[in-house]
Length: 309
View (cartoon, rainbow, N blue to C red):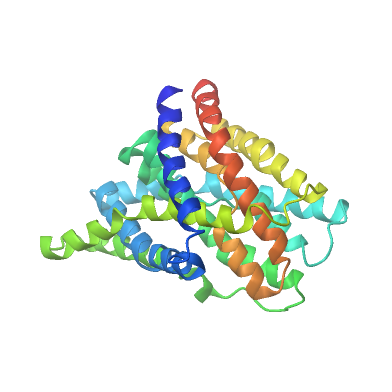
């Protein structure tokens, strides 16, 4: 418990830095955008590339990682289906329904998930985190974004090109290097590693900026928000625990999968809801509330998962 709290406190300090500088004139909205774009488009792809190389010493190890994909895939799909049923039964308004389903089913695996896993479980847990990330990302950029557009009245097919976010490209580049047996020279790996090491501080600073920007306006209790919190912090981890109990996986991998289910809603949900014409204000509230709440609950869940798994 002490290690979990220490790891979270370190991240909270970085979030506090972001919260403070977000209100400065020299930083402002432009500074937040620069941090976000640098993190998502450059640092995170380097992070994914390096982690694949360090985690997968061989093709056999890579294949072994992929065999664990059914557990997170099943969990996310079941949560999506249940959230869809709840949205219809609970008469969630049109325009908000897509945000509701995405917030209930998909986790912030990169900007919050990876730094938290690194702080709590160390570098050795990153391959397991990447397995969950692959399932989460592929489903969000296909099914999740399709639900947002459909909810906003945009009729279109699921497009494969939507899968290729910068993080996925970094991941695929790492997989290609492992499969081809390529070893990059130090003068290339060194700058890539330097960029990789900026992910955790920049990601936490960005989260602090989001909390300051959206955290003190338009946050009102609503039944949809309460249902999302119940889904994220009760239903989703319970389903993952049940799935892990039926599949023969290493205990460390089960712990990582379960921790990933209690991460906040995806930051990209805010961006995509705005682009699709869904309820962007509600998405911002959900991201802010789940981010703040996750930082408090993760140490508790960490100990709970250690006892149950």
